Image (cartoon, rainbow, N blue to C red; front, side):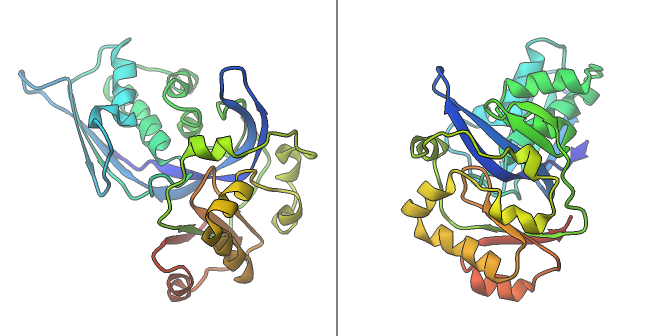
Length: 276
């Protein structure tokens, strides 16, 4: 069985408060985009085969591959349900360390595939509970619908947000931003207007009322990232922002952009675009 885990962008991100457990409460809007990895899971009927095998391609993984979120998804289900022996292969296309939730998506899609392969009959709500134990934004990818996220990104509710027909440009520089470091440089505050109220407005109004709180500190440390956002607006984006804690940026446009122009403007960057 093969599936295609997609990623997400954050339409605005407000760091609201610091929690007693050291994490931060936030408010953001997760929006799915069709930039995908490829995940294959097949059963292994060999009698002496291990419970699972895992291989990843087109990306490196620091540390033990058994700590990959796809493997964690298998272990979480296997601890409470009978699963067949499986072979799992992941081909990465979503950039890592980009604020796009690629690893969380891989894990969520693994949960859904294992649920089907193992004939577990778990509901989406049950799968979301398992996903939340893997990562804060993992549960979003079970249903992969636009969502207003609160808490640490794990409490999801419906949001009115329509981007169908717009074009999105994604730019990921060769910069790794530590999520822990990014949070350490932010001063939490309650937003004047909730993103849940901003999202239904026309996209060309978002620039004046939607923001990502991580940008101020990231721009100060990596000035070249501010240049990416400026260039996206110069190209005519209705709205441009960093996604999550970075380092990827996106611009929302009325029309498709010239690929050669993007490569020239953003050298040494991962660039991708599509119509939503």
